[in-house]
Length: 116
View 1 (cartoon, rainbow, N blue to C red):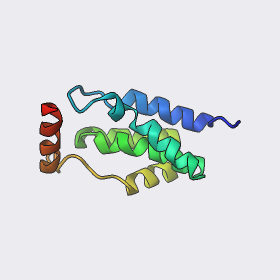
View 2: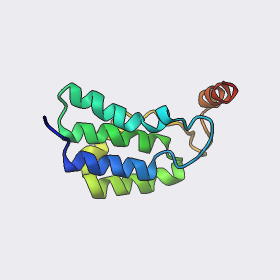
View 3: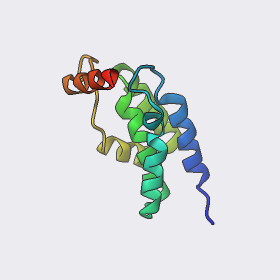
View 4: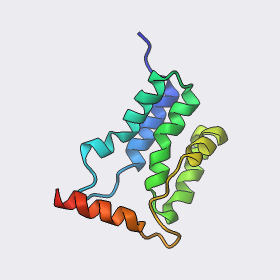
């Protein structure tokens, strides 16, 4: 049986530190487990470590407010390198507009979750 690499372990620790810091009804266990679930899916499809690491980290960057994202990108670049950062940034679906407000369609989703 194969385990996962130190690089993937480091990415999971990074995600745990920087992902899901805010609280609220949308921060369920399924939400918090998302980076690990992405890693499992990518590993099952035989993706290389760099892709798995980028998959773990993309959601951390995606969830960051604009003022925090630049700092997080710098940390990802320093710890994981330019290939991981570029790959993670390629698949982002930003959750905030240019002013840092939550995108309108996400506000509706969060309202639904709060009513559940």
